[in-house]
Image (tube, rainbow, N blue to C red; front, side):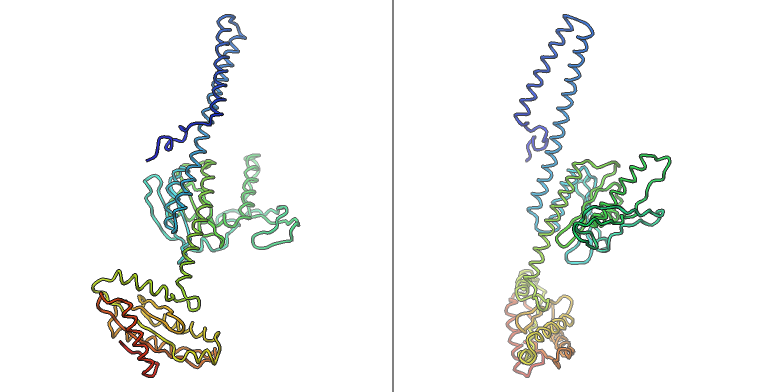
Length: 464
């Protein structure tokens, strides 16, 4: 449970030095006030009244200044605490979804936004997932998908449709080591054509219009040097259209591999966003980018640990873990089958053509297995030239049929580009219809059936 000082940062104890200085100032001001009152009482006149008025004015100004300083300190403290809570939530988050949850609630409260939108690239698919959180209704959420082109297409730094023909202005950008889309020698001053910017019409606008034109030109130049901001702006425009948002502020989410999305806050009222809200959004975007980068790296590391680097199939570790998980979740009506597949005379292929060719054969066989099994089946490289397939809810006839499809798919491989005429596989099939039977026992039965196929002449499917 939070304490009153945690709910209201302005109530926290001030720095003792500040408090002492204000007490001295207040005491001095009270003393001056008494002196002014005494002078007005003893020697009334214009000078005495002027002194009294000045003392009152100074006192009012000092009181207003003190309240403004307290409000400023409270705001900065609240901003720092909001950012600290975001960091604390991110430190405990290990999944992208948890990172989203850790950001949106505190960001909405800290910035005064009505809505918070996190748009991020899904690591397992080429889509952008956009999550909208309504900060005014207790955090209700909705999600949708944005086209990946919003993220991947090069940013358009020119004018948009429906605008009058812009004027291109060449600006001396100063000494710039590198520029997006190219480079030049360090230390040279490189003229660069700025993005097309609409300049204000002369006449009625006058100096204000000229100032607006200069400001727009500077903004365009800044964005031209930051393509991530342009992409983030495009994502924010999509969010406004899809979710019906009005006044938004956006920052890109980036990793070492580039931009992966954007963090958008929105409100219904117009006007400039407070500096504190902008700072909090910038900090949240930086920390969210780092957290998402860690989460994606962790997921990639787990995927690499569970994937065979040569064939791209799950490895034996993943296969064994999946079988163990399935054993715990099997229902009474579920059956499980296993195919054990071994490439016939693979050692002869390695000896005759070398290991690089042998690796290509393994990749081709793995691809043939994937193409032959059913969508719910789980193929894996079990070790060496041996593969395994976990079959979901098969009969023994179905297991044999899938095994035959695998055998035929491998036999039809065209390996002539590697100088290998063809390869064959032997397959052992087993099915455990009793949920109480361990899957490990089914694997052993399929393995024995595989050896029966080898002893029976190879290039065949044998059921346990």
